[in-house]
Image (cartoon, rainbow, N blue to C red; front, side, top):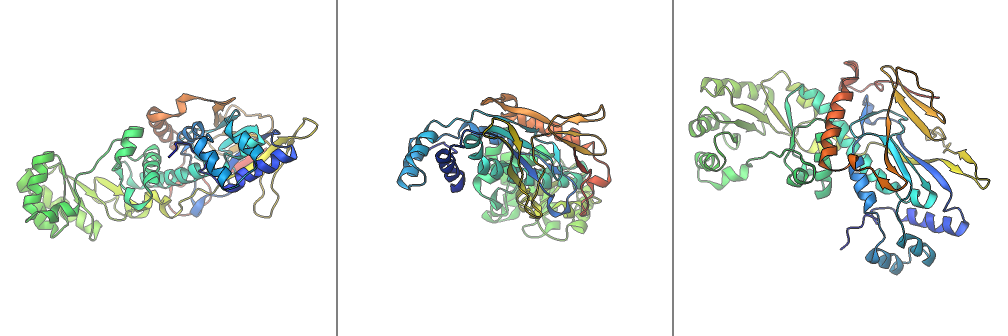
Length: 426
């Protein structure tokens, strides 16, 4: 086994290097740009997430002995390219939008500058991380809007791969979720974790009361008891009798939730458990959360929908060459011109005002109403540590909360619509 991230990529990244080395163009200085041509599902904004994870992955992007041996055995690239890869270290520069920042169609959310060989090989890694994390963060941000200040718990680990589960918890937390059920996400990223018991714990015991007593004895009266294994009304009575009126919460995972939540609230209040919270978990998404907003639900637990981007598991980001040095040593702008897949050529600088996102090609000329959007992540191969680790996740969460306030009420609507603000290229 190896900790290297170098093979988390597509074969053609390495074969392009192979051909570029042979053709003499591998060392040309280039600028690659990451952007989305459109927002998935008619959403009105996207949320950048995954940059800190990407920086960690770039640091580990090393072609060590086992990796090189496999490439040699499979005859993927030539001996010359294997020698190049053996010494690979990204020595270029990366700048872009901070984690938690909003993005729109055409936003240059990441720009990678370096030689063709050292920059092109990062394409798959960049896109696999940013596409997934940004999709989750975008969906999660919409759920935060729908929850209208109520707590949200990410609990989708069983609905995605083990590594994606940790990434999803991180992205959802940046977007405003309050906690995760995933312990590894808690350990790695400092995210609060929550969770008590599943239906299997109740079914393990001879009676529901036995299960509740065992849980309360182990976790205290402030625990959350799952009350829909058999009969909800009977379970509520048992739960309050066992835990007392200081019972922390009850959880509902099935049923006609809008009416059931109101019934449970009334029953808890009638039993004196007026401070006991109601947690709802049942295939929720932003629309079902919004439908429950007028009910006395206190906490929403979201699984499948958040870890799958609520139907859009990739943010639609692409990685395109926009500028390179030619044989005369001059910088030239380049771009794909295919119908429906074109993009502006040239390196860019992005700024935002209340009414538009302005992307300057070449020398930027912002006015006083605009704030700059990009920051340096890597400079001449050196990663800035402020964008990594648990502290960076907490900062990204605060930053997203701040930039969301720039959006109008219309921009926060869940229905499909145009981007919240236009992107203007100058």
